View: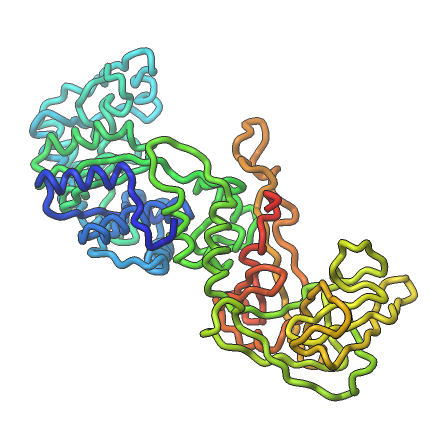
Length: 550
């Protein structure tokens, strides 16, 4: 599916039915991350879904930060999330924080108390767990469940005033301790968090609403029509509806669940991603091996490729795992269309053209893209001494080998054919350089009377630009690194997920700006690193799927 194709799925069918029936005349969605870490590729699926639906139905999508846990949240994450959403190509209709509604949330909690639908509970967290029961046994009601409305209002006001210690009291909904759905067994609505400094409200509050209370009300206050959540919130939907049914909400959005994204050869748990950073297995949240949007951006992925990937995998009602090759195929196809071609020698071996004049240099040309003439061409410097890749030469080889061999001929990309005449080795037996001759009549044409099958890339030694090239690969060696309960996921880290080489590049690459992407001919797709001040290129993806044998 191309990015221009309009995807269809069960969520879009629901929306179309709602519009056709007149239930809604407009569509309003939201993307509601908690600012407690960096977004990853799984969040990208939700971003593309929520903003994409709004765009396609001429609606609106809000960006709302569900910031109800000040101990884990930070302004750094707020700014990173905003950058990620914009980088993916979206702009929000409104920017909101759940903390914008703290006073309204408090008043709705008061409304529930006044209706006899909520009470202040003195049970500790451990006691609440004991009272909750099990999946096969009903829970027990809290001893404080039948407090009077007046006492509950007084205690809740004093909770807000800071009279009680953390954990001393909670506000709980009064629903059904025998409900089959554990989320409906008198869930907590508010807890005490003294001493926390909130990144938006400072120290104005010492009680904070729970997510299951905050989220439906925030949706209703913003006029959201369709609240799209991942499947783990399916069991929370009855509570979502209960909250809105029992307060004077301005509207009642519909919560719809879809399968979250699970991707092979990586982990998607924010806790485990944090471990990778804290334990030093990666450089940081934007390490190009990380599945974070920041990491993918630094590696060289494009917004178009990620949007295309999200559309390819679709939206379903059942969980599954997507092969990494699907994501890699999306970026290969995008960069095949748009990336200029360049030559880079990653493992340099010196070649001396013995019949080429010393100290002379010739300017050749090469197309920037073999399939797109509109991208023009660039200059290539040719001289007596060149670099070729060490893997492109063998002293002896069978007839299937199409690169350079001793006594054999090969074409240099966009240049001449050369014949290897001599191999020069150092005292350890390592090949130091090759002595070759070139045919001056083969520039842009085939030699007369003989067929040259192989083509290799090269760089002039006089004009070459040295650079560091980082060869990134998959972070883990197995498709499901967190699937073995007996082993920590760190045991499956790929020791070869990063190899650093000192390469020789054609001179045009010296002008690359941070974030510029290229195809290094015969090597893969690469991106100028956006963090390093030196000339550093990151491998985005290989030319072919080396893991799947493609």
